[in-house]
Image: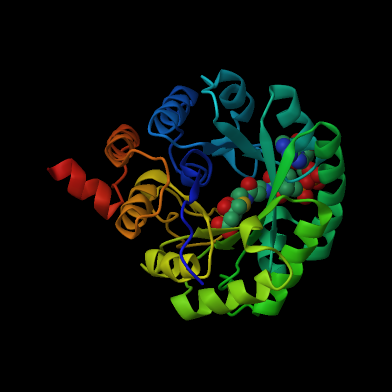
Length: 299
Ligand SMILES: CC(C)(COP(=O)([O-])OP(=O)([O-])OC[C@H]1O[C@@H](n2cnc3c(N)ncnc32)[C@H](O)[C@@H]1OP(=O)([O-])[O-])[C@@H](O)C(=O)NCCC(=O)NCCSC(=O)C[C@@](C)(O)CC(=O)[O-]
């Protein structure tokens, strides 16, 4: 299969990137980050998470973030909503799109959302129904598609089963999460092949973490298979609270550099994006995990 002509980036830095920060990040900083990302050309920005503030304190200001957005035309601002309570709150704030998040691993599902995989699907069904009634699109995530921090190897068939359930329930897109970044290119291709038997490639996204330095190689592999939606995080911010040792998502700057080199359009200005990565890492006192961002900043 050939590379796609264009790729849509889903920028998850303000959510996945910041949810695990040990020190509080102010709402003002989050809003400025989101605004700068929009200015750099990002057209889908995951901005917040309507989860329990006891479980993920860093996302406790979800209402303030969504209602405080300086909205740009053509930008979709989305949020995670694990249940009806989260969805209702997100709808009240005027979120554009929501996401439910399941897992291909029973143990991860229990640790992350306090229920089994099948219970999670039961919880998501009314979220999908209510969102549909409100005319709000729902994205679905599957975590642990290339390995689990508690169970190790995860069978591609299990990933395909959960992804298919989310798609059939009405998720317009299913994002495949290598939560702990243990995947390698051949594994990523085999997993994608299994999932794509039931779901059109156009409705799938790749959400790869870079813990073992494989994320770009894995992305290259799935781009070759036709994946045209990539989740990434500016400056490679992040880590999952329920996956010890997991480092951030693949850095958005590194993805854009790769796409530019392959002649794949993304509509994103790399120098603006790199400046945003420099700014946010300096602001929150974290290392910049984008090699491209660091190289551009040094010029
Ligand atoms: C899912 C729950 C809420 C279930 O949590 P629970 O304890 O099973 O739920 P509950 O219904 O029994 O409620 C317990 C308490 O939480 C409150 N509550 C209940 N729901 C909400 C809500 N929506 N918003 C705010 N508060 C809520 C509820 O009101 C109650 O409050 P209390 O009476 O104790 O004061 C909990 O487990 C949770 O919040 N987990 C956090 C999960 C999370 O955010 N994980 C990180 C994101 S997923 C991820 O990073 C992976 C991904 C997507 O990036 C892809 C990848 O890389 O793999």
